[in-house]
Every structure is written in C-alpha cells, then in structure tokens.
Length: 172
Image (tube, rainbow, N blue to C red; front, side, top):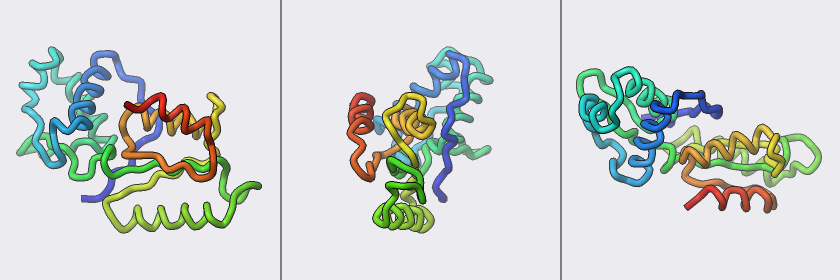
C-alpha cells in the first residue's frame, strides 16, 4: 500500500463530526486498533457516538484523507497499514532552499528524505522556513500536523529552539 499524502490545512468541521474524528483518531494512535484492524461496523459506531450516518461518513472521510483508514465497500473500514502517526515524519528547516542560511547539509538531508519517501513506507514531509512566529504559515502547518497526531516525529534541521519548545508543549 502506498503512503498517503495529507492535506496540511484542516477543513472546518461541525463540532459533532470533529468530535468523532478526534475520538477515532485517538483510538488508532493509542493502538486500540492496530494497522490493518477492522473498525466496528457503521451501525455500531453510530450508536457509540450517537450520530447519524452523514456525520459518521464525514468523519471517516476525513480520516481516510489523512491516511488513518481505508474502506472496502464489501468488507468494512480498516486502519491503514501505514498510518501517519507511525510512518510520517516532519522535517523542519528554519529557512527556504536557496535562501541565505540554507546549506549543503540541508540540501543533502532534504534530498535523502525525498528519496526515502519514494522508496518505502516511511514518508518525510518538509516544512521550510519554520520559525517561532505565530503568523508563519509553515510553522502553523507543522503545529497543526503535530496536534492532529499526523506525524510520528519531527526532525529539526539546524537549531530552532523556539520550535522545539512549542512542539514539546503539544506532545504527551
């Protein structure tokens, strides 16, 4: 199964849908359902969460887009064999390629991560220009990925201590 690409911006869901997404994602991340495991039936999930089929469909659709689950029309819904919280890593650089400060080591690291992503189940997602500024787009995308448990870890290239401090605030 190929690695999934995850959209960096979270679509604004209604609160019920987001509650179901967060609860199902948390159970997958906690290991309650291992990779390849079948989720309970839609009927059971509707009953467990006290939601209708439309809300459940939206929640499972988001988890599918994020790479946590896949569906078989005849067999049910399953945890992905390569869920992002186990196989997807952020690679944070403090500047953009080619700009002042970018160095040969970062070129090599970036290129090797890209090559590794193409060859196997592990995926590396680069975040360029990550700074501690709250309005920094790359920083906001990285923090959203961490908060939603869509990364197995983050590799910090260079020395961005503000980012490592912010990341430690979001992990358990």
